Length: 242
Image 1 (tube, rainbow, N blue to C red):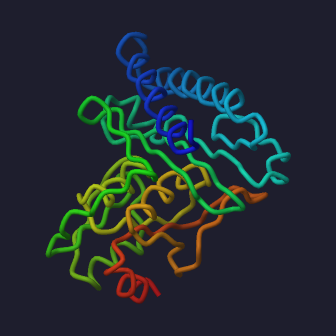
Image 2 (cartoon, rainbow, N blue to C red; image 1 turned 30 degrees about the vertical axis):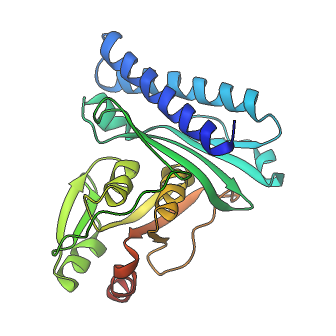
């Protein structure tokens, strides 16, 4: 199985498992989120260690192993991206499975299990982007809207659209439901590695808010900000953010 096929398979199966936990466990709120996180993390990490034993692994729900820093190939996973949305019964959450090679997000799959019986977007199966809206739509956090996005909306005459998880927002741009995703205030590598791998494969611009490239498998996993947008908007968006 290729790396991309493995990533897509694992994201799909983890999503299916998470839906099963949500629908059958009888749990709710924080307890549901913790149970889903634990089940999906166990499945993903066990599967990756079995399928790719020589590779490194970084997961939100695992104690970080510094041995990954000496590996060229490192899997970066977020078992439940948007635990709050998952536990609230919403659909705007995701499962991330990515492979970073020498720091670059080369392979990725993002599952959206709550949409249409489960959707998986993958870096090895890019599709043409739908036409852009005449009024740019900028997806932002529904709980922590960044001030930069509000300024950007004014600068490019756009509208803000609040949404849940990072993966859901990034895939909204990939799926043509928005033209840009702007985030500041901090994330971690597992929040964006799979989304940027997929978005890049689909022809989107991905960078920090100052245009600097995104790198992964760093000693510190913090990523302070993120921009994913259509390439034809990248220049004006970066200029406005500057």
